Image (cartoon, rainbow, N blue to C red; front, top):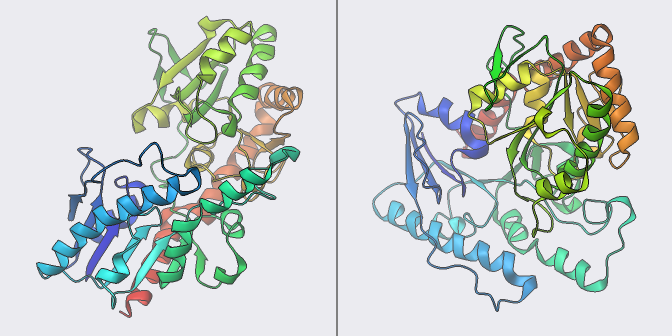
Length: 399
């Protein structure tokens, strides 16, 4: 069969599926992306598309995200036209709904299109009005306008995939029959418990599972992922626990919400923290990131009512003792006291107490760790999710 994938990044959420499809020499797998990284997947032809320009500064703020989507749609569409004219006609297209697939149906009108629909913006009962934030009329209009590209994708696609039930609930009900919930999947054979590993800090110190290590992993250190609360909890805990080491994996940037400052610098200036026991690793290679999770004594994952991070599920797969936020995306996965501990998102005292309980009660947490691992094995392991995605691909293609 012939498959066309597209995503701004590579391989992104399609990593496991293109790897599987690429194993079959009878398949022809093409991936359109703007990502200029050196990563490649055996059996997959990666083609780079180049947006011709950026969104101009004087673009209407309501239209900025849509214009960016159109720019990517034109760039990816131009490459797709060249593919079509060279004789490549896929049996099915699977594309992330982020602009790059906007015009695929005009180029390949008879080819079934599946869109990966990650997030639909709402100004009510979602991330924007979290904890009673009051939005003005302009903010509501701006949030509504951000869905323009997504709505075009939802109208034109033949089927859609969303990774969690919580994320699917954000979409208009009129599209619910078109959207199927299938998570990208976690490689539970790779992300597995191993208490024998060691993690080397930049300073040269070696940490192992016998040490008291509090971990936090993130793409960006920001309010959407509860970084300020985490750091305030660290201040309390470091003053009480002389052997505690804190390791933060991730970059000092804001991925979601308002940009404009370094929350790492902000929190370090605001708090009285023993910086010799707080270690910022930056972005880690996967093997080192896995080792960090495997030696963790307690792992914190906080989030607004927003997209659920892979990092939570990867930590659960490694058998981490999770302290998560009582927010819908986390509550879909974690049952308080069963496969993790939950705390109020903004309550630093609650977070600190839950972390201390986990650190003070390793025997009680052992069953919770095992249950966390079992949750992944039963629901999120690629052994379960990959066949579901393949079934959807083949059935949508009519094969």
